[in-house]
Length: 306
Image (cartoon, rainbow, N blue to C red; front, side, top):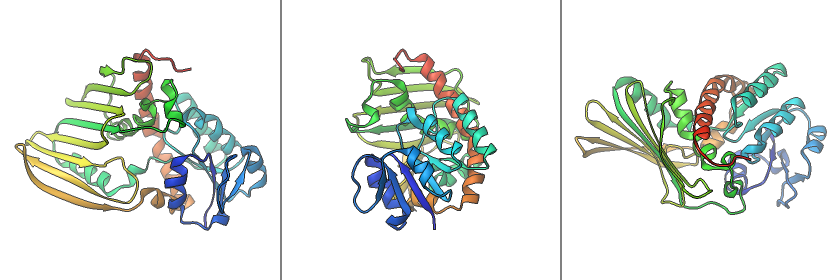
């Protein structure tokens, strides 16, 4: 039976992570100053790291700008850790954490849940079989919690990392680069609320749109050279849902495939420590590459990142 200590208690932890754990409350601890019904809370992470036995897995759900320092503290204290995406904010941070985890024989797993979906496996097979013309990725959400880190006015807390890690981790997994990217538009005020990026890799065109305060959309659309189009809806979604794949031929809808996805957060929490260790090693190069890509974009954007 797993034992989990969650660092941070926001809406995502309350609504998604805790219900996905499938654990007795006695095996869950939360580091927060808030009152949580039926679950033991600890006010300070340093107290938890001294108090808890080493079979606890820490779940780092702090804002992204604290992922590095919090994860470093957890690994240095001898605990395995699952970290919300993005795992950290640059390659130097990642390499230091990776070396520390290896030195202490621990896993440091990024909770990028969509990689473990049926839809992702379907896409992998599809991209091997067919030649690609263009890939469009759109991720937009209608609102943000004004009390969350997402409302802060800096790039490290913006949609660039919080949402951009999804498409760019996918691009990194398949070995595409975005060195010659073009930022088509960005928000003109100080807050980065929308971003459109175009680039070309291996003769394939890419268009990525990220936005908040827009209608919810979460899809990947792949245009193939045989004139077929596959649109995978709710691609980066982790909860239990029926996902749909729309298949078009010469702009006419031909078929709809339905996939019943289980709760991917629950699936990850059910993995053994041995499997999480193996997966965390596999993740390293994908995370390293997508952080490089996001940092290239960050340099091109004229926003404060203090």
